[in-house]
Image 1 (cartoon, rainbow, N blue to C red):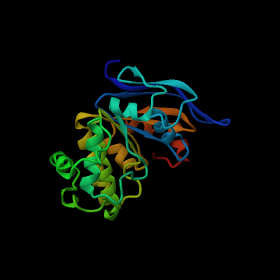
Image 2: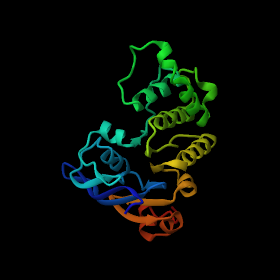
Image 3: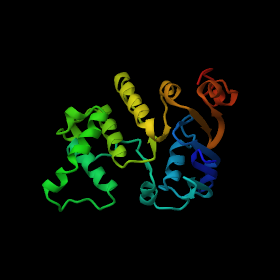
Image 4: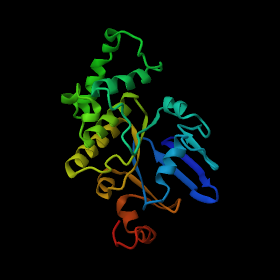
Length: 250
């Protein structure tokens, strides 16, 4: 299908007899926000690790933009335009906010980090870095050391560094985890903004964020897909309700 940017066929991961992901067939439509949800231990983050080859599948295939990427190196997958963020904020804590984004821009250029280059050369990247910081609400924090940022702002910085790589598709792992209401709203708005011209696949526990942002939702339980569709359809699915321990509402 020409509108499918990422798909898996029979994706499986087994750890010494325990099947964490079982025969997952996933299709993500180009330009969509697609959520991967499920109770704890459902296999969501394992799926992400398989898609970006931080884990090797036991079975199945992965295709991105029609190309089989099964077994590709994580760096090669990122260069193809499939870039992920992590559940735990992954920034350089003792560099400034601006320096973090600037390093990501260097990586996007396809070169190794230019630590040996003059400050004047690196300053040429500042204009684009500042644009990205403004886009995620961090313009006033450019000179702040990353470790000093509040948690929600660190996640915004991580989104900025991900955007600096100019991905066609972003994989966001728990982007609002551990946030207060104000930060959740800010990050949700950033995700929606980022999805204006790219595809987003996210693992997310905050179901109000899932409901408000997602075009399509895939629900995992015990490593298997048990439902897929929009929020209204999956939230009423009896298997989904049971997977969420009979709360009556997903």
